[in-house]
Amino acid sequence: DNIYPSGLTMGADGFDDNLRLKDILGDPFGNIVSDPDHYTTYVTLGNHDWETSREGGFAQIEYLEKTDGFYMNGPYYAVKPAAGNGDIELFIIDTSMILAYLPVKEDYLNDDGSEALTGELEEPDYFVGPMTEDEMNMHVWLETSLRESTARWKFVVAHHPIWSSSGSKFEQARALRELILPALCRYADAYIVGHDHTLEIHTDDCSRALGKTTQKPLVQVVSGAAAKQRPIHTSFMKHQDAKYPEHKTLHAEGLLWGFMHMEIGSDAAHVMVLSIPDEGGSDVSVDFEYEFERRSHLSH
Image (cartoon, rainbow, N blue to C red; front, side, top):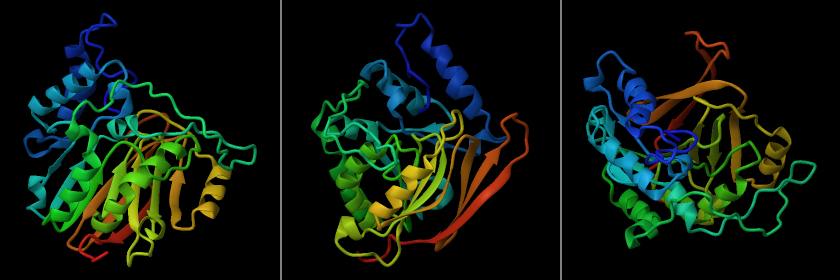
């Protein structure tokens, strides 16, 4: 989420949205490096960015499209960052908009941390429902764009995970896996998300999505601990790992501040999980490191 907890309010709360954009997006991210002319933040929206209204979500998109230092081209888009010299392509999708038209069940856990499947549907509480045919077919656009891309590395960036460890997002994750995981497994190198306020790295061997295990698993990075903390649910994690053998939790930690850093080489990428003390300061700890090989060139 870029503007938490309620996105742009269009004046409904009596606060100037222009000042909100400056304080929350423009000032901190516009000055994140010493030479902002050579640094770009590629943006997607989260569910809270749509909380007040659809108009508020698109007002934020318009701001990000026009403001130096940011790049956005509608709620979903593909872009090759200049620094990647054409070898890296980002495929940004709005999973809040996708989930708004999918049947998503409520999340409930049994006392032992296992999934309690009640069949009760989640009531949408964000103003993000797709209004056009293109928005309804974002998943089709994603698969086509991934398949036709000539980039060496293909990263899909979104808000909602397909796997997470807090025990409160697993029904959204299940709905997304059913819709977009086959395309990710066939064509993507990694899936990069937030939503859960934790730091996690997962893999999926794609056996359930494609009916066979791929040579290299799909990697998912969850980085959502920059502004709010949430615990992981260790009992839920154990049940999730046992129930879904295609999935592995490589690292998961919660109740901390932190972020991820990825370095991309010719055929391998290196991810560092970085945490910051609760009291703030400049001390940064490397909590976990993981290297994975490029997989999007494989025939799945």
